[in-house]
Length: 236
View 1: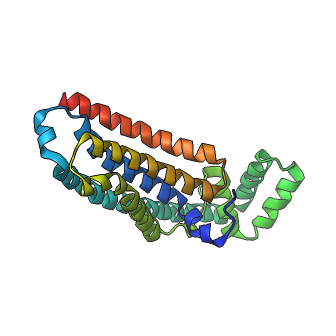
View 2: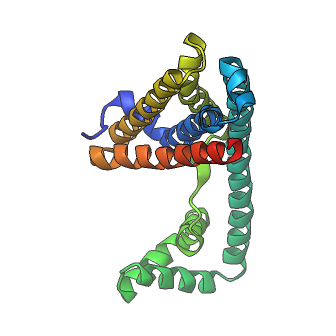
View 3: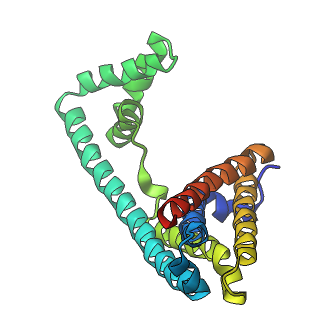
């Protein structure tokens, strides 16, 4: 099912932030739940749902803010790196335009253009140094212009996805005492959240639904299983 409609435009634009933030949020809070459930010591069992909620919410908000700010700083760094490399490339083009044309022509040939077409294309682009610099950076260094990347918006979407999806494993502990049955409900809620994240990914990308959903569930489930086993090992 392709996501061509405008209602999926914002999801597609921020898909990376939603998937990463949502998956990490789910795993972060379920790790707290699984750690307490996996621990077999009497002291851990007596702490109960309050401890799960306190530690779970503390980790949820602390890690969510950390991820959001990390996304913001990462994109700001990408912008700064691109601007620096762009200035250097423009300077190199201005200092030795024939060499820059030859370099770009070579890059075009490596991408399938014949020699005459590559030379013609590089000659045209040499009259537009800004575009030529962008083309050389993209082909030579894999750096695309980050004009569509908004650090503040990406950071907020990462934080929002982290909080929304990450709160789901904690919901049963808001409603019932910490019992094995509550953990089973949290496990079911975690699985449902991972499935929902996979469905969202499927709608946004148009990939095969089985692949989108199964990959999301398997990756998140693997992380959750590790958290549970560590809880068992530490708690004895």
